Image (cartoon, rainbow, N blue to C red; front, side, top):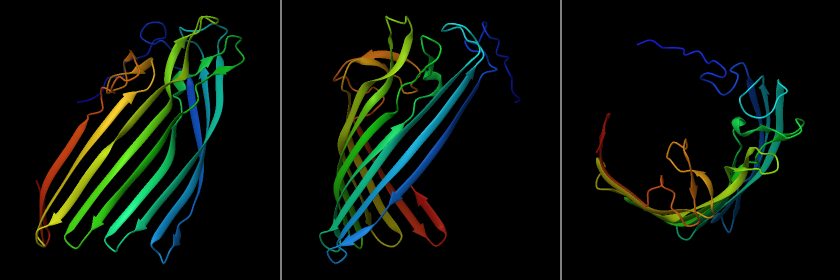
Length: 254
């Protein structure tokens, strides 16, 4: 019960002056549409999102870098993120579908550094992922089945390197990762009260080049990885099975 507010003392138990201020503002806008063709059998969903991120960090003092203090790090970055979805009704109960989307994750404020001349901000760009998926699903009165495959490629993963010219350890977009696999899921209604459902998936996740990466599930510890190494915190196989019962206001699942 209760809490303990441990004071942060610069130079003792804090590498940074705790009076520093970091601020980030995110601007985002999107445009999308739904198009129906071939007597409403072909469904197309195009879209695009534009996201901008404005970041500032006031640093009164820290144990790294070179004075003078204080200084402010500032950066603005943006990404255009397209999306495209497609589905086709082969029959009334069989549908084929595919999609593509791009996502981005902007660098943590802690990865921003002061440039060698004190007038620039060294900041990595955003990590980006291109995600593709294709599959087919069956939707009957009592039976539902879905089979799909996916492929995701992550570019510009956050990492760091030693700059031999400036003598600083700088953050940069160095790494590349890939995930691909298959997924199968289904559900069967035995009767109005009982139903059975399950899923199984296989994922192959690998580093695509050599770089210093966050190799623990909590992403708190760095290690050097090599091209072809598996991502340690991504399981190859995931499966689930459940039985459900529903009658009136009572619902239970195992």
